[in-house]
Length: 241
Image (tube, rainbow, N blue to C red):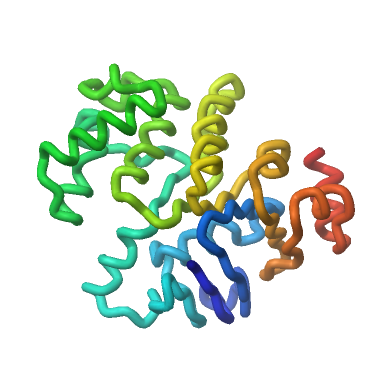
């Protein structure tokens, strides 16, 4: 579904990552691990062109996002959902409006169809009773579940998660991870930047370990956690587990 070829990102003379090659297949769950400052979030943002790569290709269903026209890029990006660390909900809009805005404006869905889908998704995460509330009335865990619903409302082919639990109180982390586990069971394609090691081991088809400007390891979860190959991965896991 996604093929990344020689992807490079630089800020002036600072190389964030260089010549990264990777593939994601339909239904795969990829956990992207690595120390802070390794470029994981920047890499994730480049995949859906929120951050423009310096060079390389990002192929979604064979179409290169990097070289697409602005109009083509808008359409391609509707296939890629994004869930951020800090929710990024519109504080002046109700939960229902937050969820239906993009389907109506970008995909041309009718208001009725968009609202019906929103209610169905809200019921899935146990928050349909919050449809008329505003974001400032939600807990962090509730806000992040709403952010996931907002991404799902666009019927994406893949969802990117950028440390979705890092801004949450510890007791709220589990409710968000449960939603993500359910999505994995439904074969939603996901790339997840996370520091939740147990979660990554449970749900991932593959672990990508990123450090020093490249993906140093791509392994099945059991192999990565039981026998990491590189010194950097061993050092990282010794601090995280």
